Length: 347
Ligand code: PMV
Image 1 (cartoon, rainbow, N blue to C red):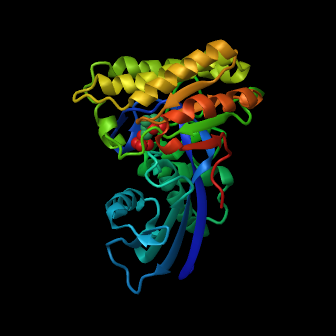
Image 2 (spheres, rainbow, N blue to C red; image 1 turned 90 degrees about the vertical axis):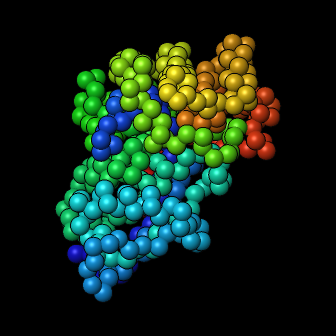
Image 3 (cartoon, rainbow, N blue to C red; image 1 turned 30 degrees about the horizontal axis):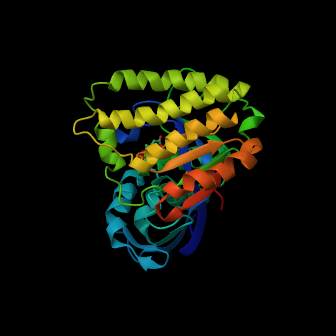
């Protein structure tokens, strides 16, 4: 059983989707399957200190700190998360928690911390739950953490393991589920080992559209059905690419997915443009350089203006100098993050 008092710490990474999750149903069930690279450098570290309450109460009780300082404005989000997961973690109402988190990436960098943050918190709670389940296997542990993380933020369910995680039922992937992410179950070509993701911080401002609102916009969207079908098809195509290492096909799937995500936002009601002029300049520079250099550098985007520049390890010596010289000047205050494919959360 769980001690009267103690603490647990976990670090959990962000992830970058290759086939994007955009649109959901009740209970954070994705409207389409997605797959992502787990990242290594962008992580949230969360420490949860727990102490048994003097008496059971029906309210959750917790303090929320960000790098040691109280963060009242995020408390409602955590409260919603706790409400969703208490059915699976009954001990939550018997304890008071002090949740202290920090991110490896700069404050308000426009890098979403929901995937890393929600998964890190889910991991801490699951570690406590584990004391009631002494025989739980690593597999079952990871699956339940992913399930819980999903209830915090959909994409967070893809942050527990690495290097590739798939989420959402689809016929081409055995064991795929709408309820949790699974480590990609097939052999992956060695070209994807150590794949780089240099994240260009184009706009560090507040997100114009929260992902909650974004997913909502897919309800009644004129292209929703086509988009959801396309995600299944792209995932199937990507499966072949991941096996044979064909980077030309990789690029066309990944870039098209990024642009489609933005196209969905541009064609919704209300509509949004989340790219900035510098986002487009960067994309054009990447396309020009790719042709000139015979490399396989490509981009992907989240629901914002920042650009993730993807390239294989064996092209790093050519691609990285190009990024520094031609792309970094488009970043806000010259800021970028050198990340790469990673293996998932750590205690
Ligand atoms: O996890 P959420 O609800 O913040 O959704 C994130 C969705 C995208 O980042 C835009 C795409 C994805 O699959 O990660």
